Length: 238
Ligand SMILES: Nc1ncnc2c1ncn2[C@@H]1O[C@H](COP(=O)(O)OP(=O)(O)O)[C@@H](O)[C@H]1O
Ligand SMILES: [Mg+2]
Image (cartoon, rainbow, N blue to C red; front, side, top):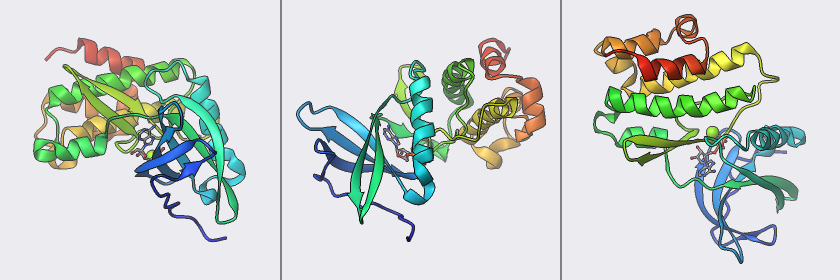
């Protein structure tokens, strides 16, 4: 069976007898996400359709769903709603119905900025919101596993950022390395948000103190947990 690269769902199509397909919200390695509206209630949802080659035995789906359900109290994560299926080329394709996040991908948000980067002070606010949210996940002894700018949806609210994370990855049961990976991934997001490699030499000591030249051993020694990173942002001296 050939790999599926797109489901090509047309707006207006009705799935599982109640979800009306709207626009394509995004596409990644595991699947495609469409905006859907529940008939009758008019409630907006996001529906993720998994490419069968990325979801053998529905395992990818099940891990993601169980993790989202376990972490349903974590405000940074989308809420899982339900599993449905639809027929596509003779196959039953499962799709995940979850909370729809009305915002902008961090990658796109950064592209829109002057110089394609944030002021370090803004970027620290963004990092702080992310660290606070990921801390909730780690407190539940779970990790995100796939933190990058295509899995972070942002909305500006006043002086801060409202952030939501989509798309966790299951690398096996949680170990200290997974928690460290999340911390390093957050630092990487910050590094990219302030302009990445092209700007790094010109950054201030406060920025470099956090980025550690992206050296994993230095980052994890300085910030032994995401809590340490959050606390640093609350207390450091300029
Ligand atoms: N709940 C959601 N609300 C709005 N957009 C979403 C939602 N979930 C995913 N998206 C969009 O769809 C894209 C792909 O979804 P994602 O779960 O990251 O799939 P993949 O595992 O294939 O990377 C995301 O980068 C984002 O743009
Ligand atoms: Mg993704």
